[in-house]
Amino acid sequence: MSGLDLPFDTWDSTVDWLLGAPLRVVLILLFAVVARWAAHRAIRGVVDGAAKRADEHERSSLERAFDTATGARRERRRQRALTMGSLLRSIATFVIATVALLTIMAELGMPLAPLLTSAGIGGVAIGFGAQSLVKDFLSGIFMIIEDQYGVGDLVDTGEAVGTVEEVTLRVTRLRDASGVVWFIRNGEIIRIGNKSQGWAVATIDIPVAYDEDPARVIPLLREVSAQVYADPEWSDKLLEEPSVAGVESVSGGTMTLRVFAKTRPGEQWGVPRVIRERAKERFDDEGVRGPRISPFGDAQF
Image (tube, rainbow, N blue to C red; front, side, top):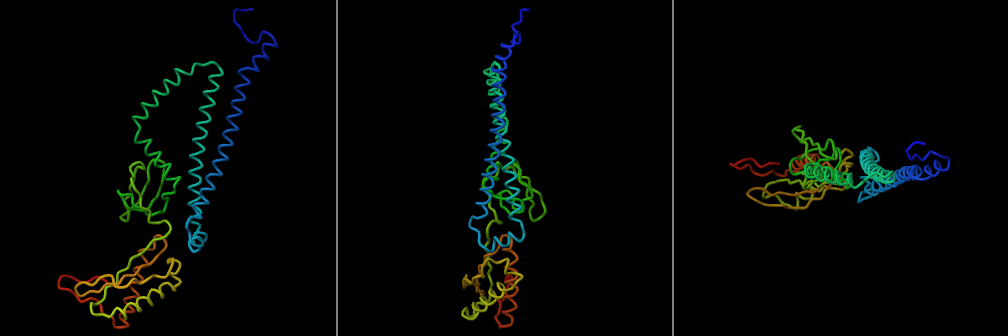
């Protein structure tokens, strides 16, 4: 016999050794695998439930019918669910693997105190050096979980206004109306205005001559609004019939009438144009005069 104390001298000692640390290591690995499977299953259930609740949140039957026809909302939910699920599964896998590794090292008799101390010091140093990066990632995670915006949405981030082309955990990429691409760090976005969620309201001001009778002009404008709402080309872009609020202001030689139109997101610019165009045609037919031209500039219709 050599001076080495090996656990394989006899069959009994070998069995005792195998039933000790090796068996516990195997059990730890099996437990980690089961825990990872259970965590991934739970994450899938939570993500699917969150997507369904978002779909049911204050949405009219018209909006749901449109989304069903186009598949836009369904695709957005799918992408969001995939992103959230991938992120949460990665976090769960990392945490479970780290705990399992440390437990196995403790079972094998390795000193954990120096390792954890070194890791803690390194983590603090990295944390101080990468504060902005961590902030960007955390902001990106909450933006995705809360569904603040998605690809295709028109948003106002304060720094830029444009259409979202890509959302990652660190940056959001926008393209503005001039075609300029903006890369905005998620941690630098203090507030966000989403112009593409739910519905939008278009405010349309129609100027006419000061001495026109509102009792004659307002009914004409209501007829125009009803005709636009009944037009199949525009009915699916309007959530309800445009409402004529009445006289908004009277100044100089101009009386301004105001119309509100509740539209689908992104249609709040096209609907006012068609209402103004048809109002102009109807006013011409009925002899309703526009504002008098001022020597200081033309009134805008």
